[in-house]
Amino acid sequence: MVQTLTAPTIQIQRQGAPKRAQDAYGRFMTYLRISLTDRCNFRCVYCMPATGMQFQPRDEILTDEELLRVVHLCTKLGFRKLRLTGGEPTIRPHLVDLIREMKKFPGVEEISMTTNGLLLGRMAQDLRDAGLDRVNVSIDTLDAEKFKLITRGGRLDLVLQGIEAAQEAGMRPIKLNAVVVKGHNEHEVADLAALTFKHDWEVRFLEIMPMEGVGVVYDEGLITSEQTQAELERQFGQLFPVATDPSDPARLWQIPGAKGKIGFISPISAPFCASCNRVRLTADGKLRLCLLRQDEIDFRDHLRAGASDHDLEEMLLAGIWRKPWGHGIAEGDRQIGRGMSQIGG
Ligand code: SAM
Image (tube, rainbow, N blue to C red):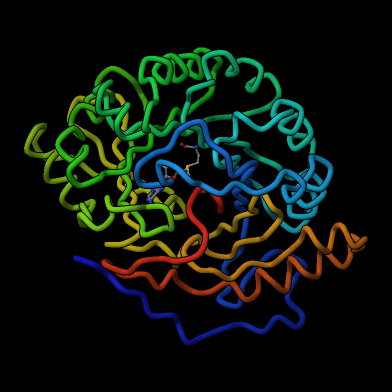
């Protein structure tokens, strides 16, 4: 069943509110997802077109200095968790140095990264040493041929080596993300879930979202978390629920006898907007208030025009104040505008 959202009617006043990143519904923003690039070394069928992807010119992407300045301001206003994403974050030059610098900002409790894992095998230890706490690795199937089809050329063996390298480097917990795509991997979810017998990993299944670039695979239709759970229960028997942090978009479950956990992320069938504590910084310096809404605040041009820290702080606070209540997407809707790789998934 697809659930739609109604905004609460009570809003608070900004005047007199503490100087913290907070929206008009009283939600504190503590989690910043930072896109380091819009480029990627995979072309997943639900994310980018096979050919003709338009990438942004390099001079439109925030420089390291600009990026660190915005992130530092965010941490001063209450952001505690930073997640690096993209595009593919591991292809950003100076990634290790960026992590080392971000880790020094007061108030930063955790730095994590969402990655396709391809380059983790050789980078994991350096990233960990610089201060990366953990990774979410995207992996939609354990079948090497299907993996190649979904990622349009990706090598599963290297991704699996990357996950092992992250584990050996001491990153915890290891989380794996699989987008469940009708006609591609909906009958393979059990193989991924079975990894939790051997490892204390969290294997999370995501509903496909109607982003630009999602292509025909979206038109095939949504596999809801409920359907994925039913598929897993056919194989493993009833899952049992596990306590979940309310700000975590995943609802957690466990297979009886497993070490790890299963997560369901259901932005379409059971939106988690009420507990949303996140905003996104795109690689080209826009603060994106909601993944599925076009509203963005431009920082790059202000940075380049010489805005003071005070001006930028005010922009951040005022922008976050107007964060929309919910994503407003229902099953069948087609999102226009920027795709997941351009926003930072
Ligand atoms: N390249 C990195 C990776 O593969 O994890 C980070 C960027 S990728 C855009 C971030 C996440 O978004 C991945 O887990 C990917 O599977 C997910 N994603 C991309 N397009 C999606 C869509 N249309 N619906 C749901 N998830 C999507």
